[in-house]
Amino acid sequence: MAGWDRNQIAARAALELRDGTYVNLGIGIPTLVSNYIPPGVNVTLQSENGMLGMGPFPFEGEEDPDLINAGKQTITELPQTAYFDSAQSFAMIRGGKIAMAILGAMEVSEKGDLANWMIPGKLVKGMGGAMDLVAGVGRVVVVMDHTSKHGESKVLKDCTLPLTGKAVVDRIITNLGVLDVGHKGLHIVQLADGVTEAELRAATEATIVG
Amino acid sequence: MNKEYSSAAAALDGLLFDGMTIASGGFGLCGIPELLIAAIRDAGTKDLTIASNNAGVDGFGLGVLLATRQVRKMISSYVGENAEFMRQYLSGELELEFNPQGTLAERLRAGGAGIPGFYTRTGVGTVIAEGKEHKDFSGETFILERGIVADLAIVKAWKADPSGNLVFRKTARNFNPPVATSGKVCVVEVEEIVPLGSLDPDTIHLPGIYVHRLIQGEHEKRIENRTTRKREAA
Image (cartoon, rainbow over all chains, first blue to last red; front, side, top):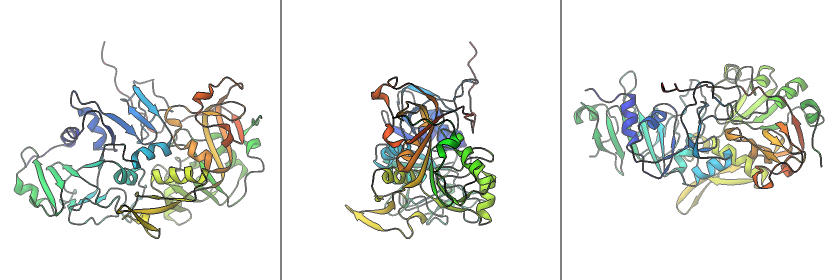
């Protein structure tokens, strides 16, 4: 069992992007997705602090404190960039204008429940815009490690952590493969390189129906 | 109408009282009203409830009001960058109400627009929905969230004219416009007050009707997370 590394997960997630759509990428592995946008696929990245058309990091010395992304990183603008306020930003998210969000996860369930903002008893930083994104965008793709450091499955029958959203996840991309959330459980879409179906099933607590 | 004041302290004179609710613009350290925050620290106003997406960092932004223990409660979506905040929160000295970021933005917008509450899908089935009215529309469940009307809104813009018409710059706009509208009184700090008539009326982001007092000043504009890329060799 080899599976995908972070960059390979991001590259696989980039294949989900559809030409001509508006997309929001979360922090962590999702941010790496922008490095793997396939040729000929033109997507506009939204940053929920108030920007469409997010460009790459600036060259050293050209950082602008007035131009950051939702991870508070300095970025640049593109010819098609537009700025707006936070209420407008979440109006387009809640209003279903953003086709897809690619987000990280701590746990995901076979019903499409997502937990990615809080571990009780540990430092709570807040949900930021994640609850609004999963409630509002057209399609939610989650990228994550399939198991914890201790080898426990993070793809579960039911999430144990406080939820970010209920029945919101459409597709799960992990180091072991790609799974879709169906009506009665998860469907295997693809196995990661070197991973067998038996290995994927063994690492998954959730019900796999096909 | 000239809304200009000589300093942040002068602009806040008569507006501050213990136990008040203040809405503050900014996202992270971007577009925060740093001069007005410093003046509130100097005024020593206590038991504040502050609605702001973030809580600053240690020693800058709203972090300075946490350091002086002037804040009783924060209404925020993300507070991860502030050790003093965490210490006060975990020891029970500071109350915290988490709002999803879009819910917070809309609560401020709604409050400013005379809308006492609105239904949203955000947070349904999570701890955020606990204790809130649920209502189904077309077979989908929504929760009721309340508008926020703050005693005072503090805002950072790029440019203003003396009548309070505002222009923001890039992503420093963020929460500032909805925060401005949510205030019973709104005080704005800008980098430059330009003469009346020099802003194109078609390019004004927030009309001066929302702005009561105005100051111009020097801003540090600290960068929280500096990320760059290498230049390709020519």
